[in-house]
Amino acid sequence: MQLVTRLLLRLGLAGLVMLILACVLTLFSVRQDIADEMQGSQRIGQLMTVLSELQQGESLEHHTLRIDQLNRSETFRHFHVTLLDDQGKRLTQKATAEPGSTLPWLNRFMAGDVGLSEYSLSVRRPGGSHVTLVLEPNPQPEISEAINSVWLQLALFSILVLVLVLALAYSVRHALSPLKEILAGITRIEDGDYDHPIPACATRELNQITNALNHLSAALTEQLTKQRDLLHRLQDVQEEERRQLAHDLHDEFGQLLTAIQVDASYLLKKTEGQSALQDCARAMYDNSSRILSQLKSLLVQLRPYGLQGDEEHHIALEQALRELIRQRQSRSDSELSYQLKVELYGAELPQRLSVAAYRIIQEALTNVLRHADATHVDIDVRVDKSAQSLVLRIADNGKGLPTSNIPDKPAKGLGLIGIKERVLANRGNLLMQSAHPNGLEISVSFPLC
Image 1 (cartoon, helix red, strand yellow):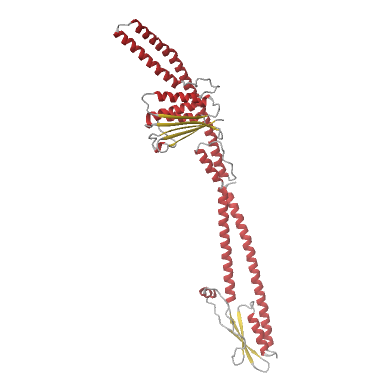
Image 2: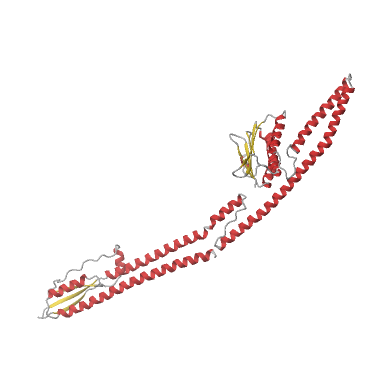
């Protein structure tokens, strides 16, 4: 149902209820007014009876008492009856002031310019005496009745407005309540969580937004899956190229360098006593040894120990990391200390995930060595059994990254881009934050299932 239709229906229902209530209250008010008018008519009839009896022989005190009773009646409307003797002396009681409106100007406005003159009627009594019956106008009951009617209408109108406002507020709040779910869904999409669709809602317009967002999530999920598959293929190709390059370097250059060393050793033996040739042969042997040592280091970087298994086998991640740390510590130009802690609890990691973890730590250590000006690095690798995830943490005490580069777009360097791609390809989460008291901390978590 459309939002406008829903609001109109609820407001119409609230207005209909208030209209029925107003009609009922108005009918009861009119019923009371009619009853007052009927009783007032009866009192006028009683007054006419008194007038007719004034000409008969009953005592004047009796008639005076009856007129006072009529005056005291709440339903005797519009005028007050006064009885005067033949000398003009009042026989009946004076009219008591009825409580009117608290606003005197309102009484004057309601009375208007109507003349409030008295009406006198001379009545002949038995025996020839005369009494005067005076009708004193009293518009206060009509004014009170009109004011009460106005107050009733204002009260009904106020209640109607209040009910409509409350109904409108409730309807809008109820109709727009799915916005909380929609906003939460948008937040999840911003955070990269596309697996939880937004539930459908009854409002057509909001449901269209929900369907569009769910369709967007599905499209993003499909694209993300394709991107991960592409990254997997690219990384597999990259690892295969590294494996092939390491194989070629080992088979070709390794044999050639070994042959050079053999030749240099032969020359050293055959040139005894010839210092110039001895020095040349010794230089050839030393240089080839250094090149061979650097070649072995390069081979380890291209295809570390423990990472040579096939795709379906598990690899020794801890051994590969310890060999990486040993090589970094053996460098004479490095003053960086390392602390490695591995807690896998016997978990068997897939080769692709182990390779990703190794390459991330390798790239992070390279960045620390090149850019951080750090003196110490902590490396933690552990399996979180409760969350079924592999967690990596690399923290240094260097100068860290600029504040603007930490959240989502770390830097323009290829190293951090490569880390981000490997995290994305393996459905991981990457967090980069300032280490305490200084430096940079990289935290990565990969799901194991």
